[in-house]
Amino acid sequence: MREVFLGDSYDLVKRFWRESLDSIGPLYAHPRFIPLSIRKQFTAVTTIPILGTLPKGHFGILLDPDTGVPLPSKQAVRRTAKHAPLTFIVGLNVEMRPDYLICFDQSYHRLHELDRKQQRAEKGKFLAQKGLSSFYYVSHAPFLFVASQPLILRNILDRLVSLGIPKDRLELPDLLAA
Image (cartoon, rainbow, N blue to C red; front, side):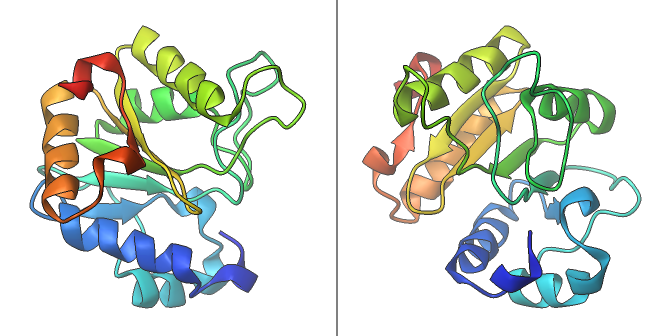
């Protein structure tokens, strides 16, 4: 999250996620991706508090890198302000045990043989191999949704659809497509 983008339409989408998914578990922003200097403003705009101590009970974590999730590769293992690699997402899930994770993801390899949709599918396959279920909300502000329990991800999916998000905005792997 860069200060220059604070308060843009993407932040309003994040606010929507927080308000819409609160019944599943409150959403917290991972501090790694929110600069200290804008945390107060970020929380005011999005209504998403910055994660401090591990919450008790159900909760979700928002990862808000500048760019998103790179394709799985040996090079894409280091977490930066721009990128949240899949290995980081898997490790965070093991370490913190959130009910769900949401990650901003506009990252795609422009010179890759796979198109954007295929690249998102590759990321989902990687997560599935690590025991995590996922789907994408696809728009100008795309987000990756991840959970270790498919039922929780199904509940998130159903909640978003019940709020009017068209199903064709959601890229689902086979296990969630039913």
